[in-house]
Length: 315
Image (tube, rainbow, N blue to C red; front, side):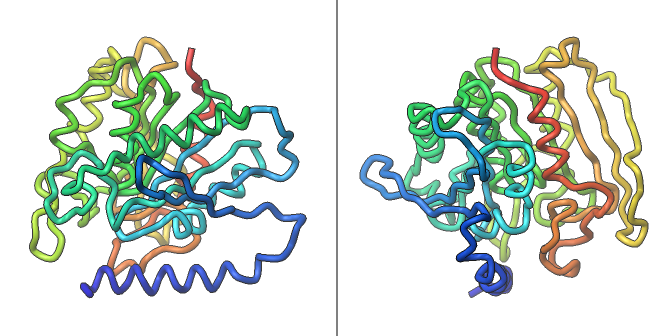
């Protein structure tokens, strides 16, 4: 087992143990593990429905995709989306990839999902269809986000199912090169959060490496954003705002870059974290800095993403 895989396995085990005391309290909503058949394959996911949700009253849906070697449980525990769902009345799904990686559009022969042609778009949209049919989810307010490989997969879903996704956000995940050749069927609100010192998915893009093996190619941060800027009819003219530096000890500074989009319903935003690593800003639990790099404590990525999502809905 490689060092990275070992760290993720230990990290997952610790989080599972930390979660155990929360079980058995009926007044507190919990993630429920479910499965769904996608063709001949059983796929798993966690679902969080806030306390007080009324049957037959559709709620917004946020789909949160984990990174490489992760799973829905880990994503649910460090992202903090459950607490946000409780406060803002939306449903969260945390799907599990088939194997360690989503089939995000990269040409990666070490990925079982790529080699076997796993259709993760079908998996996610089948989940959405089932929840819309059951009147659980508002079809005009379906959002997708993810971390690293999950952020790349979020972009693939938004491109392939642009008529079903209201907005997309990626944290530490850039546009796969081959995916950039395909355009969404409509303008799509887009948010990218990325650290300038990310060593796993570098700011400048290029061929990603893992244990000296090539894992596919991605665009740079600026080229990733440019894809969405062009798609949404925006201009390269930007406004830049420094986010409050609430925690100086994290040694990061974050900038919000807003592109010149004529229609605010199609906004394109970039949060550039100067000094930030391959991390989820504001997460309570994360990998050590020596492995993932610095994590920004100046803002909470999940709250920032929900604020962004909450401004958008399908026409």
